[in-house]
Length: 135
Image 1: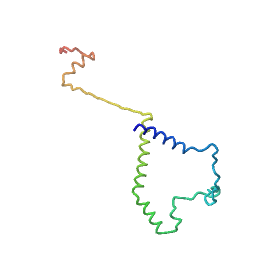
Image 2 (image 1 turned 135 degrees about the vertical axis):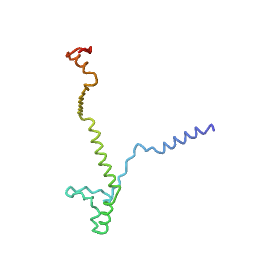
Image 3 (image 1 turned 30 degrees about the vertical axis):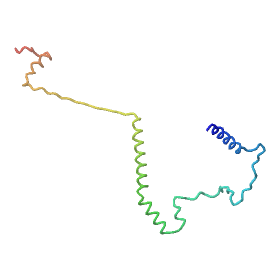
């Protein structure tokens, strides 16, 4: 067991020494076959329209199937609906940052009955008579 750490150290040093490359290393020149070379994109050609890629096959059955799948695809319709809903929620959330205006009003109309006995008190406060009851 005492020699195990020494053995591991020698093994690690040997493994690292095997991975090194000498100071005179030069990368070999390997020509790439012309079949594997990448062609430069032409500037005159337009990119193909991928919205209806299946129409290039000129297959009416395929076209009918794709059209039916797009029309009945509930996942796409659900995703579009959720996108519209998220956009509306964004507008609603942004509305809280806009200025707000509040208004309120209140009207009261109070009539006192002449039979309630308050008419004498009313006269006293308005200066029209005495409040003592000998009027």
